[in-house]
Length: 332
Image 1 (spheres, rainbow, N blue to C red):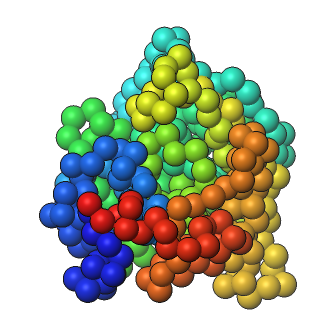
Image 2: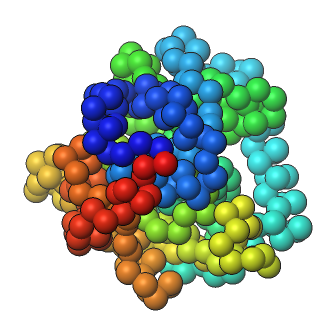
């Protein structure tokens, strides 16, 4: 792969997200192992980029989405998708491909009477299934919706495509007119008192145990709709495989923090940052308590680190103090 200075020289940091992914594909990023992809992205501070080699996002247009399932056919498909997810989760639990060891803090979700944003660290394509099952088994009757990436909605065929397009999923879009409808739908759902799962890290890094820096969307939606954020963080241990195997199944501990309510005495921008920082701090403290080591990113301090990353609480204390890693770990 390329050095940070070379990336800058080639205009990488001036590209949008989709263009950056295509750039990385051109230079062999997806020929690396999952762990080497994660290492490269962590070193360069590109926490928002997925490690999956997904096809380019097909833009989601307003006429091709039904967020509130007003179409009777979409209601039926939603039921089918939900049944598939329940069957998938049941089978995973029965076969112990999904193992939930501990549930800590479920009372923090049970006490929320309004709609809420539920945040989650994203390390597996189906990690939301664990949270949904834990909330359901605890007796929470609220419908659980999920914000998903645009490409998951527009690109996937077959049963996974059916799931991603239904089962109360709320796809993002690169088109402003679609995002207006998205935000109106979020407002309606939250007013009804339902929960919406959001992965504020945005990217999925397989079995990555640390919390990654959070983007602001989840906390903007909570602030503008005056609802709490319920922070969750899943800690993991390798299940019956060699330590370090990047694809090894994990046993989960579900950790649920106290709801973070908006502070209406603050300006919206201030409150968004406050809620984001409190959520990240809960996840960081949970990680450090469970694993017994501090959060430490391999990121190199450079001028093109995204603002949301560099503003993460204590970020510059979480990275190396010099650039020793650059030549060794980026220049390939």
